Length: 207
Ligand SMILES: O=P(O)(O)OC[C@H]1O[C@H](OP(=O)(O)OP(=O)(O)O)[C@H](O)[C@@H]1O
Ligand SMILES: O=c1cc[nH]c(=O)[nH]1
Ligand SMILES: [Mg+2]
Image (cartoon, rainbow, N blue to C red; front, side, top):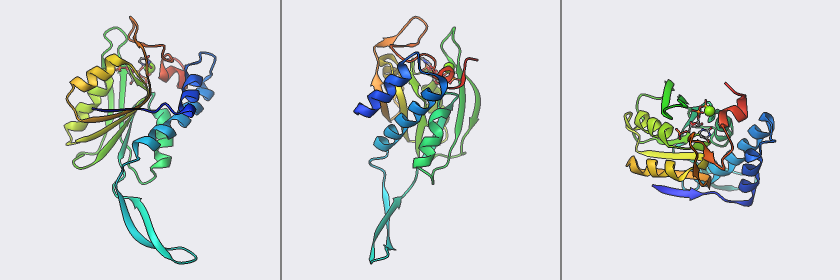
């Protein structure tokens, strides 16, 4: 597993806005959008380019485009707040969706939706979820992706708990993980500490 912590000063500032309990839903969503830009920017650094000759108003030169834009997969609900920004930066990408709700007694994810291409052979997949807590939700997603042939999975999250990172590593799935912070750990309710609370509720309201 390749782990990158995006700890740019702007990332730290946006993450602090998200952590602050005084931040309302709209400001939280805005900070997450900004942070997503930084995560996507870092995670796309090594994407392959295809070249072609283009004509500027002055002369011809080499132009570039992404050779194979990744499939973007937000994990509902909370990952929805990252989807539009990621898609704006990767406009040629397709998008799939996974819907999960963690059972707050067992802490296991309960799946309610999956809309993914039939085959993911030879496709890069970018999984978007602001929170990596126990890792159960993302490991569930890995099953959906690898059963379709995916071998190149990149996770973009705002916060990660060490316990969740260990679980991802133990899954054995080859991965890249980009996060803005590795927090201290999980509390007795499997919430990230210091964390930011429930990322779905902070964006969309409590359910
Ligand atoms: O690493 P885990 O322990 O699995 O927890 C992380 C999951 O919990 C949150 O979703 P939640 O289940 O609260 O659903 P929501 O996005 O609809 O609020 C979060 O967005 C992750 O998907
Ligand atoms: O801290 C946490 C843990 C899981 N899901 C969240 O939204 N927040
Ligand atoms: Mg939630």
